[in-house]
Length: 86
Image: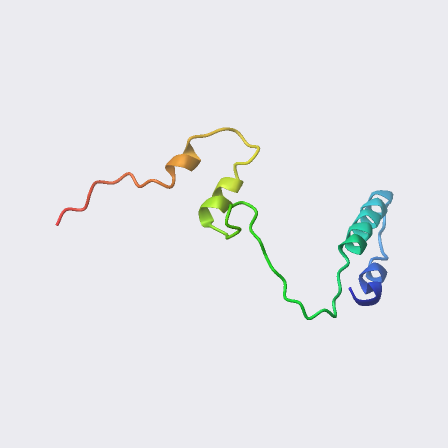
């Protein structure tokens, strides 16, 4: 990323479509104002939960966004087994 080296690294087998995507990506990278010399730590926020914390359940449910409706995602989190007898 330093000195736009990544831009120079893309220089072979370019098509019109790839050049268009490349320009879009370059624009997005420039707008992000990324500073590789910054000492600030990265932060990650999981946008699928209100708390911002990752859960396996939220990742699993994310697979079904925009897909066909199914009861399966709701039932997978409930155990259907007899009670343990002591």
